[in-house]
Length: 401
Image (cartoon, rainbow, N blue to C red):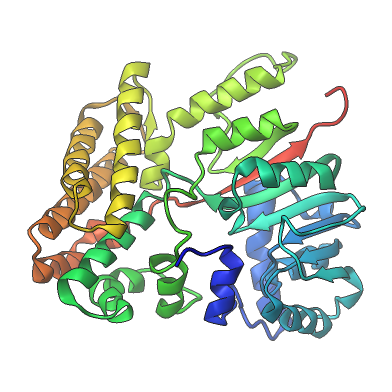
């Protein structure tokens, strides 16, 4: 069944996907420290910017991020469409002595939120990519922000999300080959991979959040360059992003003023050369000629589309194309001009592409035992997660800027 909104999906599961169950100030402080690192060092939004700011957070879930913003001195307006989350939010703010910072808690989603007030900062993390078209939420944010106000979003980036889609495709094939239920199949295929890194959520939660989530699909994922272009067209400037959307290798006189259009051109050019970095989750910058860059980008684009199609039809026409594209991309990486921190990074992405090539090849052979053997033991497969989640901060351009 097609899902209407992401919050409807979680509401039917009767879970709050990000609930941290903080009980002590030490637990909240540890989480706030992580957020400070993200906002200060990566997004260039220091906590003092939140002091006495009017902050609107869409989709706060159980409210952990809102607690941090309130602790930094923000006045919080929260729009949360999942009614199950509201008691948790109110209890959290009361428990940590921040109730006076909770200005308003509204049962509404992005499109249903109404207010005559304007805000200094809007935060919408983890779900905004499902509100489509993108121009819908960008327009709402623009209307609700004060001039020079900031909007912070996180989303699934289209090419960084390749491995998430690949895991879903492998899971779909595994279910079809073994006839086992979703959770049993996921543990058979992915438990060693899951256990390779520390987690604050359960395996079952990951199954629901990613492998079974109908919104973790290519049709919802956003292309970073297209998102920046849409934001530019609706009156926003790109403030910061993680991974960085600004070409860090640029050098020009500090008094030179670039037009907004020129800044966008430089950003989209940089993003075009960053697709392999996003896919691999490490610096793999395409430094060669534009024809080579476009050829690799086209291969990545086709690969992502085809692996997404396998989620619905694991043994269909897209499977041989996935196998061929993985082999083609592996060879292109070996022969292309790529800027990386170390030769080991290039060797690692080649090993990863080779690993997935073997995995999808055994899916084509319909060999369930070989599939499980690979996913349970291949180091390149176990150690690779990609870069699916991107953060973007845009600033509402003031009159005349």
